[in-house]
Image 1 (cartoon, rainbow, N blue to C red):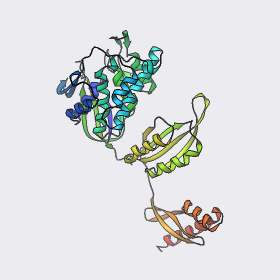
Image 2: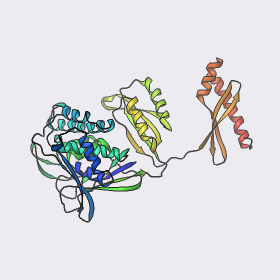
Image 3: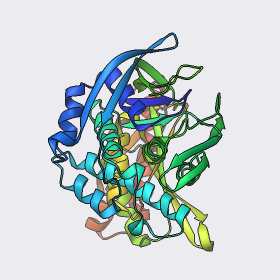
Image 4: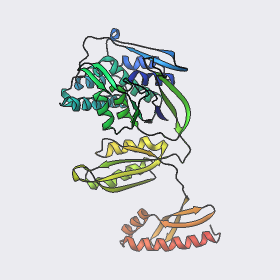
Length: 395
């Protein structure tokens, strides 16, 4: 399942939750997710109801968590989420969202992420919004999230640090770090909150995917505006354009001897092709782009291998417009060095080519104590004989 966040009126945490509940995530599951955080039962409440935003029906999720103390450091938030009885993937991604927030706030205030006092975004309602959004995507089976450009409005807003210009400084830092595309808002005011920006920056790719739509979730904002104050979550499968993706990452700090093992793991996970491209990275350091092509269904497995087996902290995913494949068939050849498998390429009903499997040639060379080149040349000659027979109708 892939999803696309269409943001005609920006995004806040509760709008994100509204999209997920409208799309079919049970609000009772949302409450059980928050209960797993171990917060006092009387410290929060969540409700959901259908509302009209202009002429559009949407779901408004209310997160109620009044508290007198709303200042928390990142380590405390990590502890609250890290000890929750939630899936590991949910805990990890939710903490990553807060880590992005801490980095942005630190840049705004000229300090370090660990020393940042979260104010509005450290309150319980922000914790509920972020953990709930990550858990809802997991529950709906969303493997990849995309988002539209972000509408940013002007103005001023009262915040913990005083009256600040809009967009909020932390919102701008988050979107800049994610290289998010922006556009003018339909009117003044804060349409994208720091919580919404953090969720987008950590979870979404800013592009519109080819998608076969299944259903739409519409989340309502708290304010009534001259236009429908909504966000829309499109849910579906990758459209039938070949169903392939290119997953890649930049690396400049890994032992080159490890790339062969990573490629092997990627092929085991379903990659159709894997390659390295040399690049120059920041501070003039040489690096590589490690890329893999796979079906959309194998995307999550490929991304997991890259994150687990390399030093990278993140991967990019690019949907491919399509892929044309020749039919392939494995045949076994008799050679002076034993049985060697060959891959035959077919175009329609015609055999268009054949090539020996290198690993079989290398194995036979080791066993016979001869150069690999010698075995490969013999297998190539056998491939030509096979092709001639296939073209004459001898199978």
